[in-house]
Length: 156
Image (tube, rainbow, N blue to C red; front, side, top):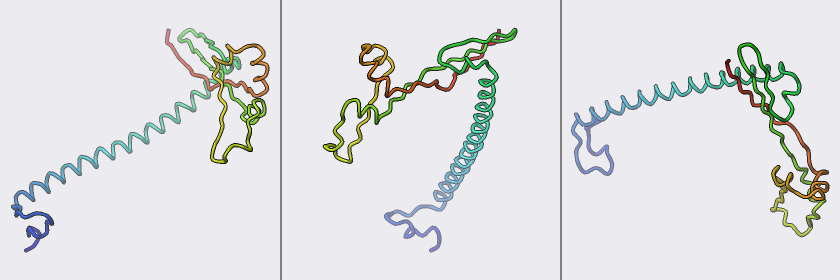
């Protein structure tokens, strides 16, 4: 019977009128065109965003390198010009050497199943509030470094 043969629609006991199929086909085509156009817009805007982010990251890195070296160390510093203020905020990162921590606290590796991973973590606040003795013991496992500067620019 051709394309409007109800037997072509499995599970359907009712015949579908040709106008319903044509209307449904037309609606699906419109939906497909809209979805395709929006999807293409998303792809284009993602690419533009990636390019803009790359350009922003590059110029921000250049700005950080143009500022005095102290602006890349932990803390908050401001650089003032006639037209604007550039503020650099650099947090301190604490990294804990897991092997040293394991040695310090005698982790029994022989009794531990190989599927178990032990990880030591010490927050900055807890480390700073620890006793002098605890801080002295932990110092051998600690590496301090500066995080990536966060730059804030304000026009005057």
